[in-house]
Length: 105
Image 1 (cartoon, rainbow, N blue to C red):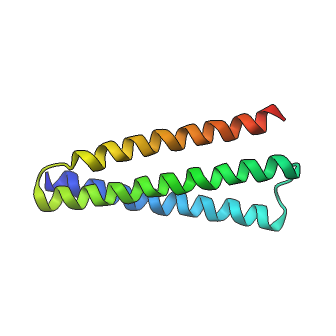
Image 2 (image 1 turned 90 degrees about the vertical axis):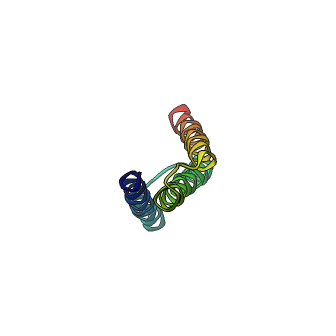
Image 3 (image 1 turned 30 degrees about the vertical axis):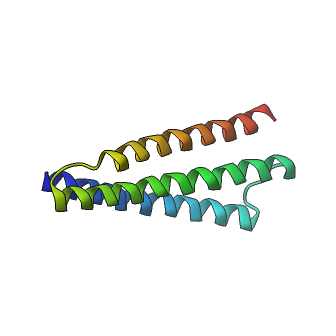
C-alpha cells in the first residue's frame, strides 16, 4: 500500500506540473496574440479552458492528498477517490462544451 501511495503522490505531482505548464503556455500564446479567434468565441472558449485546467490541477492535488493518506494510513480514502473521479469527469464535460463552442463557429 505504501508503494501505491508513492505512485499516487508522484502521479499527482506530474499532473499538476504538466497541466500547469500547458496552461501557462496557452496563456502566453493568447497574451502575445499568436492565437487568432473572434473575440466573442475566444472569451467563452478560454474562460471554459481555464476552468477545466483548474479542475484538472485540483484532481492532481486530490491525488497527492490521497497518496499521502494511503502512505500514512495504509487504506485508501474513498472520499478523495470519488471526488477525484467526479471532478475529472466534470472537467471533461467542460472541455467538451468548450470544443463545441469552437467547432460550431
